[in-house]
Image (tube, rainbow over all chains, first blue to last red; front, top):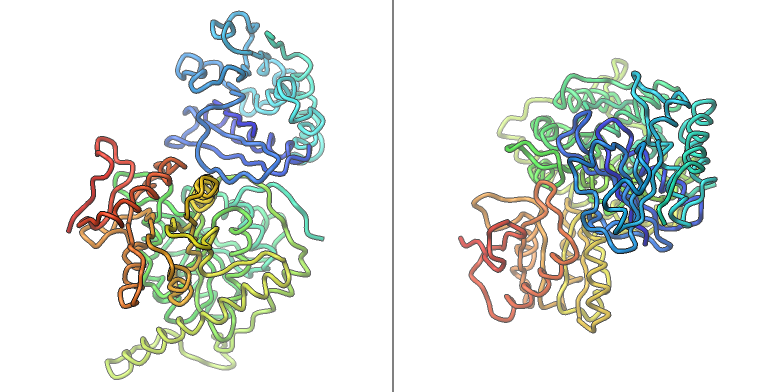
Length: 186
Length: 400
């Protein structure tokens, strides 16, 4: 079973990202998928976690994810607030939305780190709400770069199912661009 | 054609309400139920559901509104959680006493204070005696299925009671997972058109909400009690019909690996799936343990429950609600009461945990099994044991 933990802030779409990831995983033939959020007191801007499980058998476990295989940090500001390496296994991967390459992060010595400037990609594809870039769909594109369980084609299709027409196309293109531009340290 | 999709449980409930072709939805949004009314409002606005959507100003108004719509024979749905449900409280009794088959989805959440938006069962347990049929769900598929079933059973001429469909707040309401959505023709076959014989109609006047003097009130309440108990046969028939059409089987009391078990874990709601994982591990180690899921809470399934536990030594029961100053959690207390007059009966060991969103993980279930077995063997004067309380040594019980 693959367990993915998203760190974001309320309103950034981390929860939607987890939902889209499992919709993509279902398209790739994984029978057991599950996505759910963990809110603090609900407010825009507060740290939020979202979880996704992907398995080839039904997922019955309903607890939070404490030892993730993949950690996705949607908001780089959270790196100062949250220990994003908590509970990681030796083979776990961190995916960061950042302008920096993987080697700039101390924990890249210990863990696989993938980086992508998802905010810049969001801006270039006009994925903005109230002037703020919406990075959840571009950062999803980085996930197929670090696991074979979910394909970029399914991520694009899940996005296009969620938003019909031009909006879906723009979000899917952003995911594809992030997929191509993601840097992985090893 | 039925299809397998991924949907959030809240959206699955909304989809079931749409497929049931309700006439009216009246609801007030409250965390964690918000996504249900939100999606239904969208469906009505987009023309996907031909119903009135009434954005009322409180939960008390939501229940009052569907009381009115049910009185004229409209298929009526509402949904709430926590403080919203307790605000509805006085009107809940009117729904069951008037025999209005309103369907209500409850995304179970803790009660204030302190304010807490996460899951436990305090909200619905406060409504235990309101006379509604009450059913619990373990996953998204069941949340969808029980919502459909609630319309079929509640509106049956031999039932005519409102139904609460309980799904755990966040743990289910906000979970996205796969489920099978049925074909509309099958749903329409399962839930026939609803005709209310006593609908308010100026052309054929009836009175609803009459005064009940002492010379009739006793008889009215007794007949209501008999009718709710009698609804058991239709409740089961509803599940049988459901299985014939959709292929998924449900029962009032469901057991898992209970064959030959000496200890059963008892849960209601979404924790049943985690409990079953623990049972799988223990069974693999050769331990005689199983799981009992209490799906139907009201009317209580006495016969099935007694039959399911007749050869069992120990019941380890998880309650997600306090009964302050009482005999333990409401579920464990009722199970004990259901067994008291039986000649042979298992030892009922109650635990209260999973309060206000505190996780009950596999390890906690493992502890419950071991501790309950120990208490059966050695005895205990405790009423129950609080689970996962920080700073409290495990094995510390609460005495009367």
